Image (cartoon, rainbow, N blue to C red; front, side, top):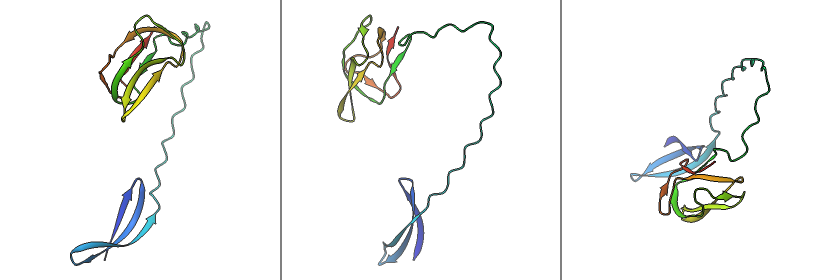
Length: 134
């Protein structure tokens, strides 16, 4: 009889295998605790910031220069906006097919479309820029 350790979906099992007539047969399965993961190294403390002479300018409003990236690979089914369109939060920007399902990509904020980088029928990859807001 031989013992093996087998890992399935992150869980480690100890398996005893006995050879019978040339074909291995599993006799017993026992769960084994996974090896502990090493603790992350401590991060060094940030250096103190230099004092500012004047107040920093207010950040740009939401939507300024923001890119909309593809959340997963797929194929563009329809593009519902064009350059110059004013969009509202929640509005459907485009529809793409991923994992055999149609997925709607909606605006997370109000803004003006500055660039559309995809068209109907295009294949997209995860993280690929799709739309740029001005």
